[in-house]
Picture 1 (cartoon, one colour):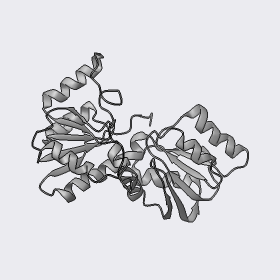
Picture 2 (cartoon, one colour):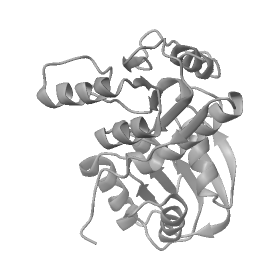
Picture 3 (tube, helix red, strand yellow):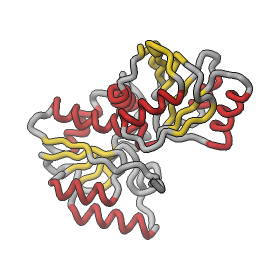
Picture 4 (cartoon, helix red, strand yellow):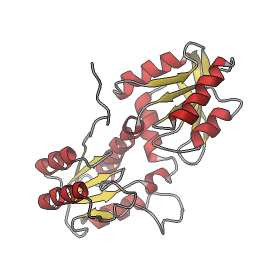
Length: 262
């Protein structure tokens, strides 16, 4: 199977949407290349490119951009040139898979997150733009939810904004960098705990802090961009194996973007 054929098969799973301006295009390499090993990842970092190439991957499917702009246009920026040369020297094909999984029903990225979290909860609402609302079977404090997520998802530190120790029942999930959807969800009267990948500290995080200090049952949990979405790319590797058992597929973790003193 060619790289382009595999990607078209993945794209066929999506819901109707206008993809005329999609970023889900081939970024590097020959789209006609035959593939027998496929690597999936969150970010095709230099270390991921090297590791996937050493494993024998002909195709890397990355959720996020590779060359520092949304559509990965070629620029004369020195680091982008170095990274592109690294990728080209390996001969690997790099393809982005961002818009299509988010417009699949259910959202592939969010389903990967929910499956890995294994929170004891029922999904009460599935919205667009990665929003889901859950009701916990038993109340949990934001700290308890954060610890559960750290253990299940392997995130070093889930940051907590707002309420910490008040038992809550309602939890909303967003992933990645979803913009104003996070503040919109925090402003919902019924919302209590909102998960986010990354967001704006001076605006949205401070809203959550003020809400708690004004006596509201509101908390914002920041998982990090990678931590909130990588299990969706693990799920993508599983989908490839299920649909094409003749192709080896494996997730390569780039790790969280931050390191810590301990």
